[in-house]
Amino acid sequence: MADESDVLIIGSGIAGLYTALKCAEFANVILVTKKGTSDSNTNYAQGGIASVFSSEDTFDQHINDTLVAGAGLCDKDSVEMMVKEGPDRIRELIDIGTQFTLKDGNLHLAKEGGHSASRIVHAKDLTGREVERSLLAKISENTSIRMIENAFAIDLITEHHVNAPSKSNFTCFGAYVHNTATDKINIIRAKFTIIATGGLGQIYLHTTNPEIATGDGYAMAYRAGAQLANMEFIQFHPTSLYEPDGTRKKNYAFLISEAVRGHGALLRNKSGKLFMTDYDQRKELAPRDIVARAIDAELKKHGDDFVYIDMTHLPKDEIADNFPNIYKKCLEMGIDASCDYIPVVPAAHYSCGGIVVDKNSRTTLNRLYAVGEVTMTGVHGANRLASNSLLEALIFGKHAAVDIQNRINETFNKVSIPEWDDSDTITADEKVMISHAVKELKLLMWNYVGIVRSDLRLQYAERRINNLLKEVKGIYKRTKVFSGLLELRNLIQTASLIVKGAQMRKESRGLHYNINYPALLKPEGAITTQSKLQNYS
Ligand SMILES: Cc1cc2nc3c(=O)[nH]c(=O)nc-3n(C[C@H](O)[C@H](O)[C@H](O)COP(=O)(O)OP(=O)(O)OC[C@H]3O[C@@H](n4cnc5c(N)ncnc54)[C@H](O)[C@@H]3O)c2cc1C
Image (cartoon, rainbow, N blue to C red; front, side, top):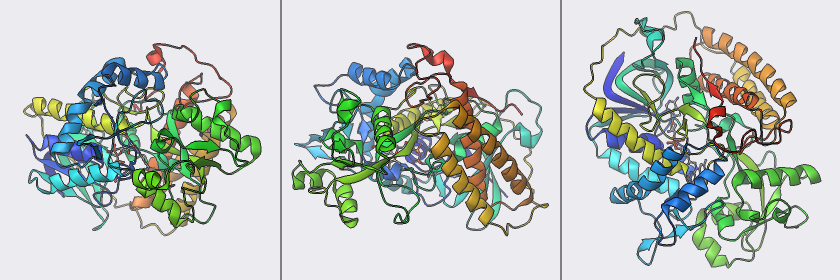
């Protein structure tokens, strides 16, 4: 069975939804998403979107803060583009109905770590949910967009599948998509395909990312031959809520947003000592990698499971008013943030690397674009500045749509695409093997490819992941596909890319810290040392 559209978008977070609306102005769009429409990282974003609106702020300051956080690996032109176009994209969100928090009729601007001015546009501490709500509402009115839920993109369709002549300059013709409700696998053909599948936090034992973040887009793009880079730069959020073993109901952690520290909250170790002064003069407002490593060091030094975040010096109504979601969640756990310290641990949060794209969001494959967290646009470098990711998704989503509009009438030869063939496969009866492999991978990545790495740990991880890759390839070949298997295949593939990237980088920079190479290789202009990964098979 085949469906057809001008543009196929995979993913319904901010990147997919916003780009769909932009593309629907000139084309018909099919948007597939593997679960429900609002199952996304976007829906969990708390802090907000960074952009220059204050008279006490300038584009140059936002650009500089972003470059400083990126530790010499940002692409300055892309950062400038993102920062300068930010206010227009936010006004556009307001125009479509996003309700940001206001103060005296103007946008209320919060401050977060690494930012030299107040510039975080937000909707209380539920920014992502509000953005997702407003984009979905707008899409529901748009007849040029067909949204398909429970539609799991398995693989991109390229010359590998259709035996078309080109063998070096691959073109994407759409994707094979598993409808998890009907258990059918469809071909969706498109003139242009956009990957907007978000991040990969579920590769790690502790993560703030919900279940959908299994690295599918990175793995699909890699298998199709697109270039990826900087996969080693995983941002660990310093403060996710600590829940003792066995008490957490979901397999991801609740985030205690950066904005809480921006608002004056302090970090104490288990003995109550304020420890950030021992690590960085910016203390609680140092960039995330520094705070996460400081917490990791405190935990290792004292053998503790968590440190505390302390808001008890702030007025109760100020906490409840500014952070209603966090305040409520803590109360549910018996913690009153106005008089109790909140136990926190670092957790995998954001992937700075990904599919390499240019300023128009084009990947290295013809007719394949990528937007959002799954990309490496050059704006984050070795470390993302807080609240720059929702912004990046909007800016590069807009550029993708403009570029596709300019190319929409280019000649596109219709090739014959074979139906999905699973005639030699059987239905899985040993699903325990899948869940076991997922658990093993998460623990392995947490312990050996986490906040602090070493050559030996990476070697061990590489060996074990290569074995897992082989085992899963074997299972995949002989088994009818289902979500758990598809996700495991992508988790392992993406984990192997992180390990490869980490092994290629013979230095410590930004989010990548290897005790065998504690220094920077080259302080500035190190873009040439990007760890590029490409599968040419
Ligand atoms: C707890 C939390 C708080 C955050 N706070 C902030 C913040 O304050 N500010 C900020 O800028 N950033 C924040 N971030 C990061 C930001 O939310 C994400 O980077 C951003 O939302 C990513 O958007 P996206 O559209 O690229 O991906 P997502 O929002 O994750 O959407 C990906 C979509 O792709 C779908 N999908 C995945 N694989 C497949 C497949 N194989 N087939 C079909 N569909 C698929 C998913 O189901 C989902 O719909 C936060 C992240 C988390 C987890």
